[in-house]
Image (cartoon, rainbow, N blue to C red; front, side, top):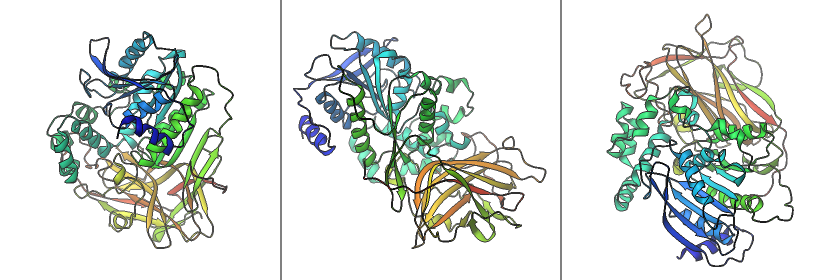
Length: 556
């Protein structure tokens, strides 16, 4: 199907306002030279109108596929669309090194744009995932030319997502390394590997030491994977030049953010939102029932992003746009729907749901009780199921009953709810643990148990414990604070809340070997017992932001 016809059909399917586009002129493989001489290959989709604003997209995933469609959609709406392959990808020179060159290459590309005869002085940026990192790398240096940004499932800082809970996001990082490497292999070979279920990647996720896992997955050494295994320290010079969080407050352009409740970067993206709000800005925030690569996210990001650019990236003054509520979220669970909010998070009452003996979860205070215990064995690590993962087909809510039946998973379940309970905002847990080994992980997951007994994951989080962090009390008990993914969820009457506590979620997080050996070279695995305490002196609990119910709205 020709790109032009596909763009028309996509505009109709997205219910975009009608346009009267003239012919779109497409120039491919433009050579833009960076300051060090590297050539960055770039495509230009030029509209028929004069004095048109420009939208820049910088990507490591190739300039074809969905980006060709987006280029034509933008040009049909009176924008110059400039789509550039990051260095070392899709024909651009140099070597791809994540986050290293995006600021300088972005600045050099903006300098090239400013020297073009069609440049009108208004810049917008659009980007999903890594494309959004590239936006944040440039945004603070674009000055007054930057008029609008659309940041989809992305954030200004990737370090905390890479080492979520100070563990290591093994599934995300290794899967992404394999995906990037796959762009360099023949198409048929890639399709055959996908059809076989990616057995090399599956084997690599189980492999030790992790320093060899990239070779197992791809047959090659992936430099950034090796570096990320070594550079865990958040204060390391290595990360200071690869995160852009300290630049967010300098951005004055209107920013639209789109994310999903099961997205890998959601906590970091909400940190960016909070930073912008602290400056007095009013960013747009949309969070839906999506995973990182789900089709629904793609459709919503196009609809929301193009509308945002229409609103703020204009070559001439427009009539005032009716104000929209700054935050729009989807309430998952029973009777969910879309809701507009004035800000994130909304007012809520933090309510402690205490762990009780006998696997009970209740809001009443804890009672005298003996601890619950389990043995965690990194040679047979507790598996991860669903949740925020890079691959959409494996992410999101799934039935947890199989993993909950394992002896290394403790569960605490409430009585059936007499009425709906709505949870909106950040979720956290305080778990009191005594452990045989000084190195361990604490994983906490909130689930919704329906009337059929199926246990659907809502949100979760993990913290890696070391001898230095957190400090034990005189009885050797650790108070472990676990930040779970934020959520907006409505538990129906008759459903039950369930909390899982376990020693890991592999391969989403790298298994804790129990030895304190370095992440990349650890091969010795030590199993050990641990106890979860829930007496009045050690009130283990899940703390939920409970809000009053409000009517849901039609879908986005």
